[in-house]
Amino acid sequence: MLDDISISIYRKSIAIYMDAISVDISEDVQILATNSFFQIYETFKNSYPVKVKSVDLFKVYAWFPYILLKHKDSLDGEELIHISMDMLDNILHLRGKRIDKNWRKKIQSIACNGFLESFEDISFAKIGLYSSYKTASHTNQIPKELPEDLLDTLEGVV
Image (cartoon, rainbow, N blue to C red; front, side, top):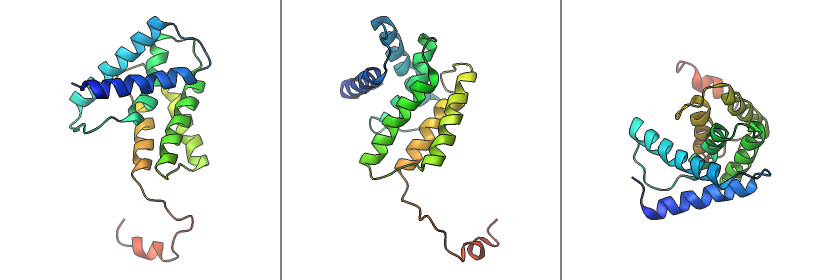
C-alpha cells in the first residue's frame, strides 16, 4: 500500500491534470476516477514483479485519460491524450530529455487507438503510453546521424 506522502503527491498530480482539462468534471466523477487510479495502481503493482521505490508521475499522466473516460465517456479522448502527452513531455523536458515530434505523433496515434479497447485496468494503450515516456526518461540522447560503420558493427549480431 502507498504511504500518505505518496498518496498526497498522486492526488496533487491528478488535481493538476484535472485543472488542465477544459471541461468541467463533477466532483463525484473526480473522486471515482481518483479512486480508480489507486485501485489500478495496486492491481499493476500486484500483477507484475516491480518494486515501487518512489512516486511515478508517468503512471498518473499516462493512465488517467483512460480512467477518466471510463467514468465520463462524453469527454474527448484525443484531447485527454494530448493533455497527458504535454504533461509527460514537460516531465521529460525537466530531465533534459525529449521525444522526437514524429515519434510523438505515432505514440499519440497508438494511445488514441486504445480507446477502442475495453477499459481494462491494465491495457496495452495504458502500458504503451507509460512505457514510451518512462523509457525515454531513462535514455541518453541518441545522435541524429548513425555511424557509417553501424551495419558492420551489427553484422553477425542479428
